[in-house]
Length: 314
Ligand code: RIB
Ligand code: CA
Image (cartoon, rainbow, N blue to C red; front, side):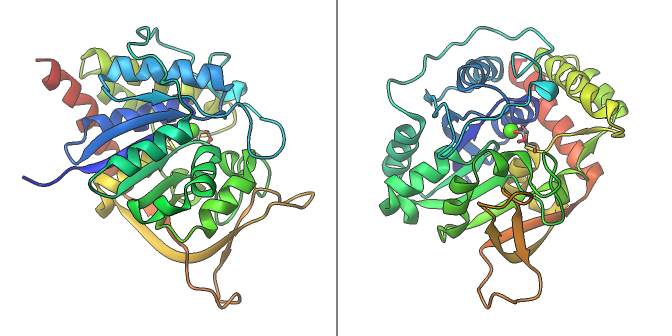
């Protein structure tokens, strides 16, 4: 029997975070050890409530802990215009089944990693506040972190400012710690996630599965596509699910290794992920950057995952 990959899910659900967690739970290759929330798409209170409801919907039986209310520096920014007032507008979700642990997200991450017999992979699909704090407070745990797979950044441009992608922009100081940590880092940035568009006809493939989780996923896609359609997207960019796809189906992805630095100052470029394409820095690469995806293979992966909930409940 193949050993499952132990993972921690850290995110700001968020429609695409929720779909990423759906994909992770349905994968026979992954073992979810813990879930943690971070302030991002909405306030920490809302992303924490959403995380716990998503865990209830998906049947994720793992400890949960809340992250910090603010980034390491500065004030939080939220994306209510995209994810709605609740941060996960759209379908009705079950009430939480797990209470938050009486410890912080960082403490739960550290406790989980320390107790794991095998190195743990962190899947971070929101701002990197918790992961950065973990690396600052518990550097001795680095050898027990197998990899950090993030959704964040963009080698060519941003999506919240011309230079910065949302997750990195919310907490560039935390991202700087992560990118300088020396821990194996896979970056699902906009370069790949904007190619991972889920089209309305794909929503219908998922909706047609008919199980309760598939129905909710289709309705999450309906809502999430609303904002993106209004600004000209042909489909819903399910950014965060690519950070999970990188773990369970790497063959649908194309990557390149770069030395990436995080801009933490500047009037126009704070939060930019600056890749050294030509070796100017003389530094070894620190980032396995995903740059292309087999979109059809990605959709098939999402459909297979959503279908699993029908079989699982059968
Ligand atoms: O820029 C996209 C990222 O910001 C995604 O993780 C989305 O959930 C938001 O957090
Ligand atoms: Ca997210």
